Length: 333
Image 1 (tube, rainbow, N blue to C red):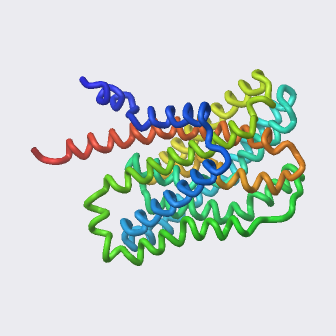
Image 2: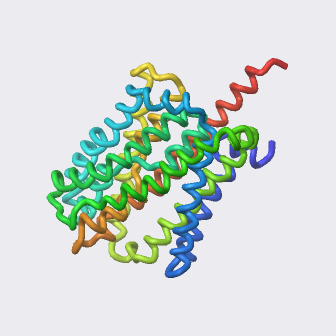
Image 3: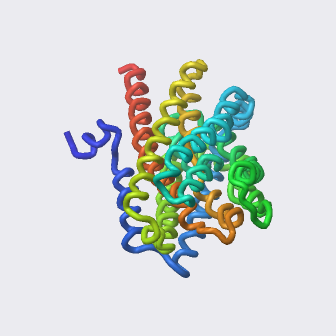
């Protein structure tokens, strides 16, 4: 058995190794200054291209089905903005005597963020889940989050800033919804080509995640957050993030089965309901926590982001491998 086959047998493949390599690259050679801006622009257009491809690939009926799957959408919303915040409040209360106040605040802030967009959809796609429903759930989560996350911060943390940035809503529309709509419009021209060359979408979705990981981790290294937090507090936060993610993953998986969702919808709930967006969280934190130790407050979020990518990459790869095996067995010899 080859090395690649052994990795896939346990749910790993070269993509996970690329993720680890990307984090190490950012740790030792972080992008800064003009380089960081270039990486951010590349990540921006990679995500836009990804959604253009999704728009061109998905037929309108599938999109309508994703929106009309109200039970799945409500479950994702409930986990993102109800279950997660309750868990964050409880975890912060338990750990607050042992960590800095800013880190305790960061745990709560992490829990009230919207779901990720690109990684939720990419992992759903890799695992052979319901991609149209994932597109709808992740996009709606971020649109609502532009207003709901600052409201929850004001309610739960009594933070104040310069107000809600509606530019974030515009950015979501330009980067995600607009390319998706354009892809839909161009579907009659390029849809068949993209469907026949599915490897193209796979390269773009995985590549966009790698670029985002490098950009996000570089920002943390440049900010020097590792120098401001002691090793004990850092270990506690890492453990807390792992416990929080594990609990949510188990609960979303169990809820999907109890709710009677099919396999594709369960995977969508698993990936969309367990994610928290670093891309949305960082710019909002700079506004909502102006004048405070933002770099420490966002540390739980940054660590959670990396952990969720690694863990969900393993789960997605394994689920995709299982789906491929089932499909190959279903094809008559």
